[in-house]
Length: 347
Image (cartoon, rainbow, N blue to C red):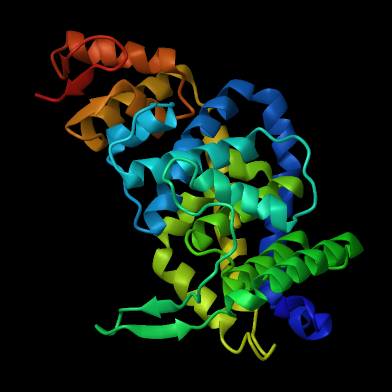
C-alpha cells in the first residue's frame, strides 16, 4: 500500500513523455465503440485470438508451458489433462474467460482477488484462494547464484496490507485526480511487493490489470493480448518492476519506471488494434494475396487452417479457405488428414 500513503510524493513529478503516451491511449479508447459498431465480425475473431495468446503468454512468463496443439485444445475446453502445467493452463483459461464475459465491475476486494486465485488453481490441486502462510522471497539466478532481489512483507502482515491497498486504491480512483492507468500501475507495484499468495502472484497481477483496464473502459485487452506483449518484453518487465519496488518498504520508491512500461505496452496494443482494423478495409483481392504470401513464405512448413485464421484475423475464414483450396489445386500445398483439423504441408 506504500504507493497510496503519500499521494503527493508518489504521483507528483509525472514524466512529461508519459502524458503523450496516455493521450494516445485515450484516443484509442475513444475509437473502440466505433470499431465495435462497424466491424463486429473482425472484433470477434480478434477476441478469439487474443484469448488464446493471453492464456498462453501469461503462463509462459512464469514457466508454465503447454505444447501448442494441446494448448489450443485446452483453451477450447478439453476435459482431460496430462500434467500440472495443463491443469494450471486450464485454470487461467477459466479466470480469463470470466473477466472477458463481465459487463459490470465491482470494486476490488480481497475476496474478489482470492476468487480469481481460486479459479487459477481449480484443476491443479494447489492452494488457490488463500493468502500465503509462509514467507515469499523474490530471487534471481542471473548472476549464476541465488540472489534475493526483494523480500516481501511476511504472512502475518499480508491480509492487512492487501485490504488497505485495495481500499486506498478504490478511494483514490473515486477522486478522479490521477489518470486510471497510472493508478493501475501503482496498484500492481504494491500488489507484487506484498506478494500476497504462495504461488501465482504474477499471473494474478496480470488478471487484475485486465480487470481494472476493462472496468475503466480500456477494452483493447479483449482484442489484443496485453500478456503477449509483456511476454515479448519479459526482461524489461522484470527490470522495470524491480526499479519501481526499490525502497518500497520505506515508502521511498519510484512508480514511474513501471508505469511508463505498462503505458507503453498498452499504447502498442492500441497501435496493433488499429492496424488490424485498418487492414480489414483492403480490397478482397489484396487479402487473398496476403493469405497466399503468408502460407508460402511465413507460415510453418506444416500448419492448420485455424493457425492461418489466427495469424490473419482481418481476413475472413471463407477467404482463407478459398486460398488454401487454390494452393491445393495448384499443388503448392498438400493435405494431411481431412476436415477443419487437417494439417497442410508445403511439399
